[in-house]
Amino acid sequence: MHCTVGDFVLDVVQNSVEAGSNLIEVEIDEAQDGVRALIADDGCGMSPEERARALDPLRNSGAKHPGRKVGLGLPFIQQAVEQADGSFSLKSEKGKGTEVRFFFPASNIDSPPAGDLVSLFVATLSMAGACEMKLRRTRARDGLSYEVKKSELVEAVGDLASASSLSLVRQFLASQEEG
Image 1 (tube, helix red, strand yellow):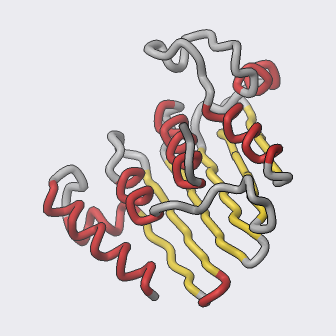
Image 2: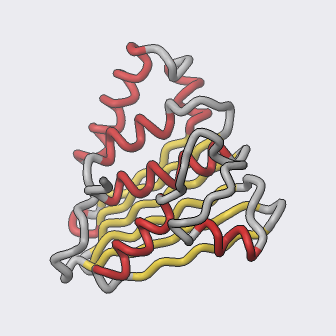
C-alpha cells in the first residue's frame, strides 16, 4: 500500500530504471498549497496504446515486468490524486522517454504526506544501473532548495552500493533537509 508521496515516486523511478533510462530526473516540491512531484526519464517511452494500458490496473502484458501479474503503480497514483482532488499527468513518446507529474493539495484530508524523502533519495540513488539521476527538492515554508546528482555523489563517496557510502549519502541528504 502506498502511504506517502515518496512511495509513489519510488515506484515510478523503478519503472524508469526498468525502461532503460540513461537519465532520471526527480523533483519534489512541498509548497503551501500541497506537494508536487515530477519524474522524467529518457527511457524507451510508450505509445498511446501503451500509455492507456499503463493506466489500466487490470491489464499488463508482462513484457516490461515479467515477474508481475499486474502493474498498479500509475493507476494507484492516479486514483489517489483523484480522491484528493489533485492533478495527474502522464506524457510519453516512444523512443524519447516518459514524464509523470502529480500534485496532492494540502487542503484535502486524503492527500498523503511527503514521507521520508531522505530514505526515498537514498533508495533511488542506490538502485542498480548506471543511469544518471538528478534529484531536486524544494520546500517553500522555509526556503529549502537543493539538487543532487548521482554522478557527483559517486565521485565524492565512491560506489553507492556499500553501506559506508550509503551512510555518508544519508548523512549528507539529512543535512540538506535541515537547511
